[in-house]
Image 1 (cartoon, rainbow, N blue to C red):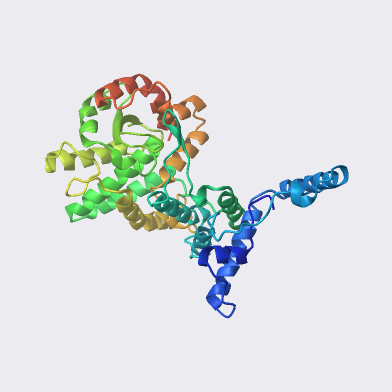
Image 2 (tube, rainbow, N blue to C red; image 1 turned 90 degrees about the vertical axis):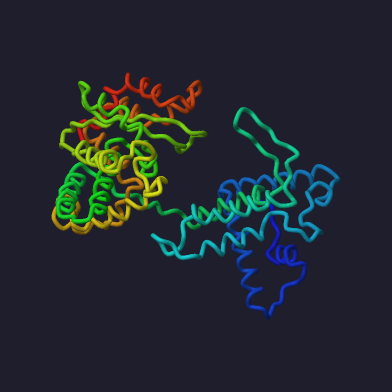
Length: 410
């Protein structure tokens, strides 16, 4: 077994402090789930590891019995526990297994990454309760190892979660990538919708959607990062960057990014002239005209609600789904008739498409890394956090020609 073990009957007694009612369907169901948890914990170790351990136990036991006067009771560990207590977190394992039976979105049941959230909330609740132990904390810089008595951090529960993952597996559902052809087809559909729109709010939504798609695609950005764009920042450098030798737009993002601590400024240049003539300048100019000249707004978030709060990605994701059917119908070469449209999303379609386009265009690896790994570079040891926007821009200005090469061929 190579894992802490008690049978399901013992686990039942540990948790409920009584014997099960054998005539109770719910008690029998609970015992069945506990057995499933035990099996998952056992299979959390590789078969070869268990076999090797068993072989070694037999050899050592044989040697001890033959060569010494000691008996098994005298040199083997005592198995079992006379105390009625849940030492390994079986009660949490039962909750995890019950949660694993909920219907999923892309498969019959929910995925492991969703299942494991039960363990997360339980561990957080445990640490907020009376049993939390903060006596020992081992720290080095910002990385800490905390001593805890939570059973969900113990060996058995770790083995159980690994065995569960091996049993249920994972289905990765990735967004279909954008291509230059898809973005251009979307531009034509949205341009016609914009021309025919009688409501200014509808026009504003179309402008924002196209700006969002183009920024994400050309900027190699994750979907949730685009709303971090600052209106004041893009306005501050607009005249300088659009009149540069290599005309471009400088995206000024401000916020907390994945894998980082604290708020930061990031500057990402987008070329105004690309191989397929992607109309980023047209749509961003329209957005700025509406915000500055019609709305009188020069500060705050670029993508904002009426109350000034940052608008979330899901708002534009819904708009994207409204226009994609027309793209698929009118431009079957861009989006095939059998393609599932819900597999496109602002979540990752733009970033995935940017990587694919860069590979197809044979963009040098150093350029791709410079564009796509700016987060890693600025998290590196010695980086100065929380610089003012102007200083971040001046630093980025030196690398702009290299970064513009990333999307110029799109």
